[in-house]
Length: 111
Image 1 (tube, rainbow, N blue to C red):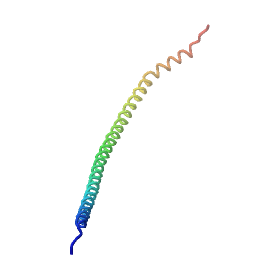
Image 2 (image 1 turned 180 degrees about the vertical axis):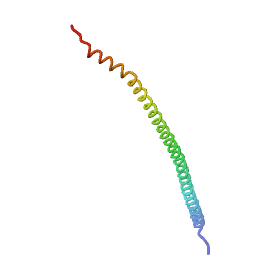
Image 3 (image 1 turned 60 degrees about the vertical axis):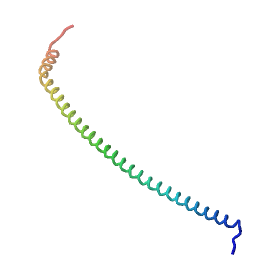
């Protein structure tokens, strides 16, 4: 059986087209696999970065809350000391003020 002269070329062309189709399919599959792998790696990096930033945030919150607690304690102590000083001043000058008021109210002034 003899093959028509144009048929051999067509067969070669069809075989080359099938080979090209396989190459394109494999390339697309490889590209999809690489994209899937890159996405998984990016998600891992994002999760690690998020965990790092969350840790830093929690540390900052802990530092600031302990700092505000220390500030609160310091202000409470300073306020108590100031109140004590004022009370001591009042006690020291109380009799002096009472005497001055008694002098003004008991002294008769005629205008």
